[in-house]
Length: 199
Length: 255
Image (cartoon, rainbow over all chains, first blue to last red; front, top):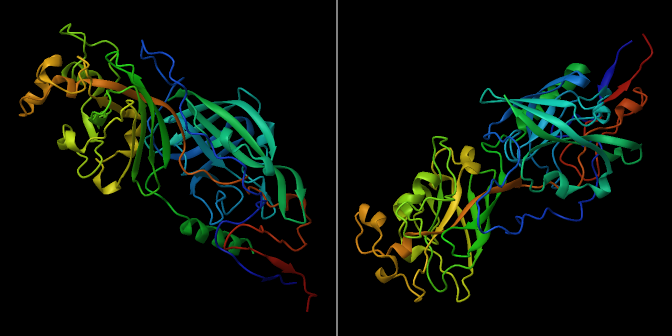
């Protein structure tokens, strides 16, 4: 018996469950209204680290430890996704993990017949830890604040990518029903986390 | 089969872009210094190519006057702040000398045209003017090549200071208001009114966002964990990209 490999072999980021139409709104980048003219208080909350590129992510509860690759945007404006199942990607169009603002990591639910790095993401609960190693040798430790499953047709763009006054992290994968006609999952699972410790 | 897939993945990794910077957008809240009543917001955004766009919207500034404005901070990670209290000489105004220990040196001069280095810090003719109502709108993109090294790494360590107060409310910067700017004199420029160099607002980062927001959801899964692996994989979306990977494995009768 001999296996023959045929068909097209493609190179770039592969559409797994893509195809969601653009979300209806972009984030509003207006800062909060000025109220206090007397004092000059801290405007941000919680620990904040300097910018440094992430190198690895670990989620002890899910036994995940993965290297990170850079993700940009695809030609259609959606986020690129990793080209294989077990690598997690860092979206370079947003802050680095640990720095002020929302850092974005994406990994597959499944891909090419394998479970993806983020297959069990929906099992996380508030308080679970996520750690990110960074190029400057530091470690950013995040705690999950909420886990959401949203239809891709109603992706919460502002909540995921919009301005925040602390160092945040969002982990994104697919979830919900799989639409075998379109080849896509209908939902995204999004884990929201806050930086709790800079090590 | 596996090897081929792995090779494809490796090539894909190489082809993906690796920008030198994380592009990000920092929202800065401009707060009143010296009881000017001025306030505003600013956004500094660094794109993938490392160009820096600064957008400032301020209100309550001395009307019809130019307002020198700068990104302050330091390259060396020293902590800097907006001056909450620093009026050491008790004249009721925080001067540049009183403020600088708090808010750091000029990192970039936010001029309307031309040079943006610290040498343009007092280039009053190239600074934006407030309108008759004291509103000031500013937008400029400074190319990566004109930025100090490591600007990207320090984006959130910087802050914006706008200068220019009209202490005696006569519609101009004059020596009668607060006298001469000893700061300007120390730089070799005499007879500059202190009104022109005293800070009016100081802005610190209040929030940050993705600078380059993707549309829609994220395609992180192909359902292959749920399909019979002997069936045809039709990976790929209507919308995405260049690429489709269809791996067809067909059995043949043994010969």
